[in-house]
Image 1 (cartoon, rainbow, N blue to C red):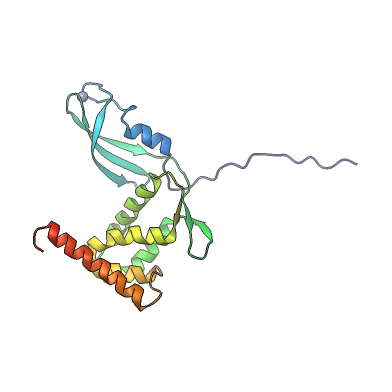
Image 2 (cartoon, rainbow, N blue to C red; image 1 turned 90 degrees about the vertical axis):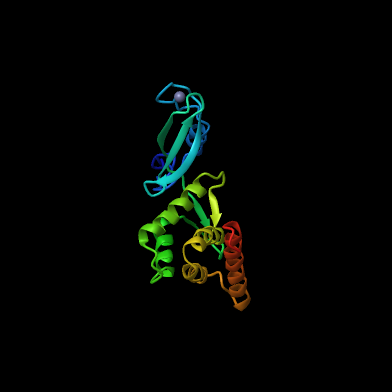
Amino acid sequence: MSYPKVSMRPIAARPFSNGFNLDTLSRLTSGQLLQCPSCQHSDSRVLESRAADSGRSVRRRRECLQCEHRFTTYERVESVPITVLKRNGNREIFSRSKLLHGLMRACEKTGLETQRLELVIDDLEVLLQQRNQREVSSQEIGDLVLEQLGDLSEVAYVRFASVYGKFRGVSDFISTLDKLRQRSSLKRQLAGIG
Ligand SMILES: [Zn+2]
């Protein structure tokens, strides 16, 4: 008796909607693949980076190191998964829409538009994608989002902190408010009005 033949195929990596290929990104960042459109010099410095296309590409403003010509590049990135390690120990694939949903809920009636919240997530994704590790804890995601929300709306900051399950008791709540206060006073000092 012969066993049915089982075809063995390598499991292909699933495509994910978000993610950078770090190799591509670092090579581009070092400027080796880019030539100045004006003088073809291959080295430039980055003046400004911004997420574009919902975090799937990076827009960079560059300056040629030889002739100082300024030009813009869009660096599209390949899909690499980001895994989120949840508080309960489970892992799941980072979901942009899930995070956006949580953000929108926290930011109801704060005057923050969805478009602005999408930018918050864009920045977060770029940050996550540029790191070496492909896993991030849900707590760290919460902290990174809070970092940005603190600059936008204090109400949204506190609400998101509670929605994201950061508050386990009164002491957590107070320490979050303290952090927010420290941020505000630091900003005032930096602005020279504190
Ligand atoms: Zn040049």
